[in-house]
Length: 395
Ligand code: SAH
Image (cartoon, rainbow, N blue to C red; front, side):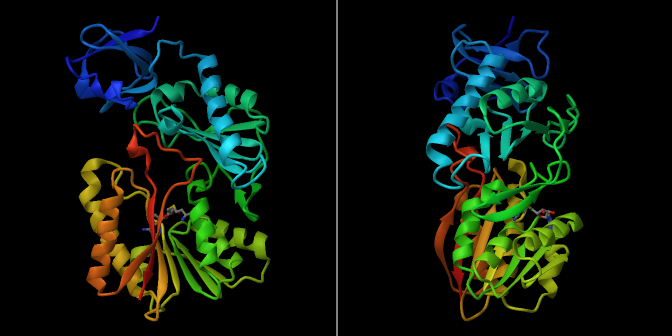
């Protein structure tokens, strides 16, 4: 039997508007034997059925999975994953990477009505990340559903250790299928990348920047390019493909830079004018004297929580100002990003505006950048629009 949870009087409005989270302040009481990650059935204070979801102690008390009274079981996960797959096969895969077997996000949390779950596909490998105890406890069911639903998927790797809520139910990273040989090489718009989820950050690659990398390629002809927070050099590979005169990748992680060098090599052999540098970006920008035609600024999320927003905005202002100072005075491009969910688009744009004002440079927005269609945002959950970027002409 599912456990029951009751809301305080009048707190059901957001659920009736399909917002997928219930905050702890809205909860009146729950069955005394409710544990972390259990499925709960949620009722209004009047006893009206509202939804079902995963229970969690913490500020988000329930991550809603369904607004109808249905079993949350193997069949449920299979159905939700098929829906996500069907939408991508129909509308998304044909538009970008073409055929199946390419790189894409199959499940994007709330955007696919599976709050707390991310699944990325790399050819025959699915990498899943649970962000809630409930999803962590459901990993085996999800892995089974993935291999049943997606024809291309033969292997499933669980990469949830770093994303699960801390100090609760522990999920180790590891194989949920037979082990696959790694790294594997995938192709994104004809560019090759080695993927190693056992080793890398996120699920092994930042799929979310695919369309922005493609745009950058078109601005790269003849350019000197500085790729800051480069990770495995994905922007650098696109810049070189677009005819950049020289490209520099900078990241504080030695492993990331080694992988960036390797990704350049598998695409261009030793013909490419590329340099990988291991450095802290804040130090690097203080000392770098060159000016560049194109700079990519794609830092990690500075604000993981609402109370960190002010500091994050300060860091975005400072970084963007330092980067703008390095843009060729005759005119160049800055591709600048924020992947902090807690920082909204307007706040980010204001930070870039302050950076421009601090440096006294002229700056015009040529493109507003986003996460791609395989990272959908539920209209009821605008917080899901975490990746924001601007392509700015600076002179
Ligand atoms: N642009 C990349 C993703 C960037 S992820 C892509 O398209 O794939 C953020 C990266 O920033 C990580 O690789 C991390 O190692 C690096 N990083 C975090 N803090 C840093 C710092 N202070 N200096 C340099 N690199 C940093």
